[in-house]
Length: 213
Image (cartoon, rainbow, N blue to C red; front, side, top):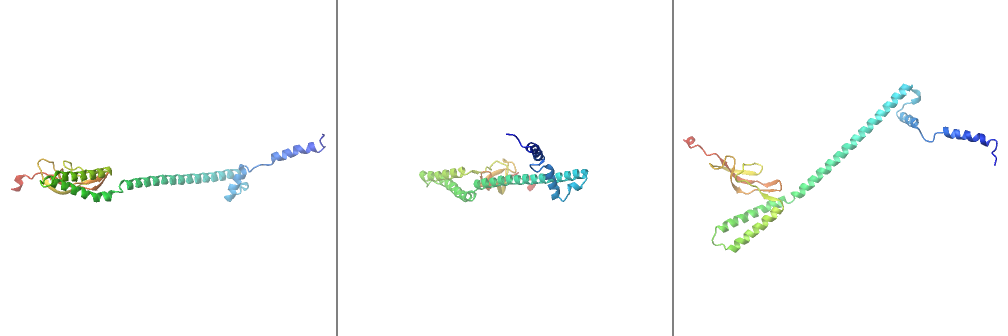
C-alpha cells in the first residue's frame, strides 16, 4: 500500500519531538528542587554563584549523612555493649545464685568436723557411729565442691586481707612475721568470690628479752 502525501513528512517530526521530550526528571531538575527547598532561585544567580550554591548544598547534605552515620554507629555500639553487660550479669547471677544457701550450710559442715574430732578422742563412741558421721561429712563436702566451693588455704601463707581475717597475733621464732600460724575458723570461696574469710592467727617476731629489762 502507498503512503499518503502527509504521512511520510509527519513521521520524522514526531520522532524528533519524542527525542526532545524528557522521559524522566534529570539531574538539573533535582538540583533545582533542592535549591527551591533552600529558597534559592538557580536561574537568577550568576554561573559562579550557582556552582557555589550547589557546592554548599552538597556539603551540607554530605555533613548530614556523616552525622546520621555516626549516630547510627554509636547506637549500634551501645546496643552491643548493652547485650554484653546483660550476658555478663546473667552469667554472674547464675554462677553465684546459691551463695546465700551455701553460706548457711557451711556452719553445718563445721559442726560435723567438730563432732568427728570429739568422737575420735572419745573411747565411748563405737566405730560404726563415727563412720556414719564421716560419711555425712564426705557427702556434704562433695555437694559443696560440685557447686564450686573450695576451702581457703591459710597456714604457712602470707596474711591476705582479701581472704583472711586476723583474730590475733602470736610470737613465733619458726614462722616469719606476717605469715599465718593457725586457722581458728576455716574460710571458703565460691568460684573466685570469697563468701567467708578464714579467721587466723598471724605470727609476729619474738620480743628481745633485753628490751623487757
